[in-house]
Image: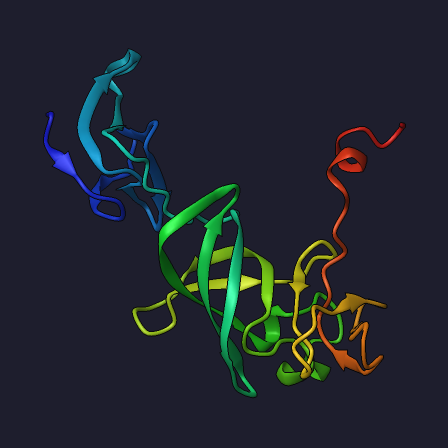
Length: 197
């Protein structure tokens, strides 16, 4: 009680007597801390204990399953793209997390026809969803198999910011050269909030 914990530390097993409360997340049957702060155990009805972490100072965010994250592609090979997670939802991270997008997680359809180098290039900024925590070498496993997920910012070989021209291509505004990408269909915020307007 009142013990100082760090993000990602396993606190206890999630069972009939322990539930994840604020400042924690549930993964593989265990409750983990998502904040740097003090551990609190709050007794609820039926003697169920809510495991909570009260943050102290700056909030540290840890990606959890289902979160939308912004990543920067580091390198691409035929099986996966290695990325750094730089934002979780709207929170910019002070230190990036490692992640990877596997070939089978790039698109929802025609997964066997995906070519990684035609989907992502090093330096691309990509919106992705967290599937799970992989292992120490791959980090978080991510997917772009939704229309709204994929490359949002890419530079052409001439160094210009490219413009999306289809689901699978972006174009340099200066050279008009097209490059293959898994393009995100970004919905402007005012349309997403009020589709009837």
